[in-house]
Length: 362
Ligand SMILES: Cc1ncc(COP(=O)(O)O)c(C=O)c1O
Image 1 (cartoon, rainbow, N blue to C red):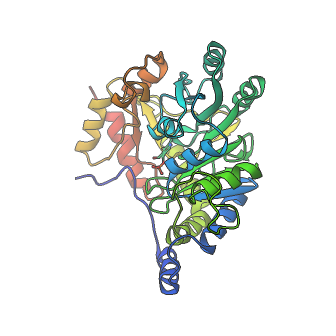
Image 2 (image 1 turned 90 degrees about the vertical axis):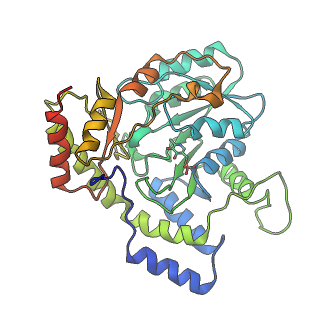
């Protein structure tokens, strides 16, 4: 039995009390609680606007549509991410094209992005993923986006509260998208958020997730839309979780520091945190030559692990028929292993994890 799980969402009395109040009031679907959550989340990210959505994939889809990205457009993104990053591009009617990642940060390599952009004349956006809670190289990616007149979208689904050069992610590109799935640094059950400084993008995204309604919210449908709204119950949970997020992230960072120190002589490569970035360790991911053997050994001693992700997106069956060259992503997919780092991992757990890895002899 797994004694130290890879994820362990923490929901407390305050979430329960807030949800109870809303249930008693009958405010279940969209409403003022969602607007408050949006305002608080925008403030937290240092963005002008936030638009809630039913999940992170919906947020990405809505952000792309709001940016006018659709059929005929290609979007450069990472092959080493959850499939939703690229799926959202396809859902918007555009074509995902893959550039390889940096071997240290696992984020899009700006030079690889630039060479893909130069080879084609249909690229209109870059979708950068802040994998595992570490921001991508936003400075260089913004330079590429500026040079080639591309939109930049941050996939910050795993990076709530992470920072680049002292500024929180969610405030850099034309839009950024977050997920509140239960394993994330904060949760609403299912949920998502778009942040942006662009009023036009916020307005179109809010309309798209709400049946294409006009901003007055009546029965005036000004564009094709969907129902991808967040519920008030989810927003209520999100507001409490957002207030806790700085503590959660501090606990993750402290657990990560312990592991990095304790694994200094172990046969694994520990994660990098470049000087200009603040990692929030959605995952604490090491690389090992014998990744699957190490995972089995940890499982034997009750330590849960995860492989994010064992198959690069361009090698997924749903992406058959396309040929991409991404050797760094392919190598990482064979080697990465994520260890428990969430706020409920105790010091004793950390010792167990580190000892098991140090003693592993394959
Ligand atoms: C990098 C990344 N992008 C997008 C998503 C999609 O978010 P959701 O599961 O909330 O739809 C996730 C989450 O699972 C993710 O990790």
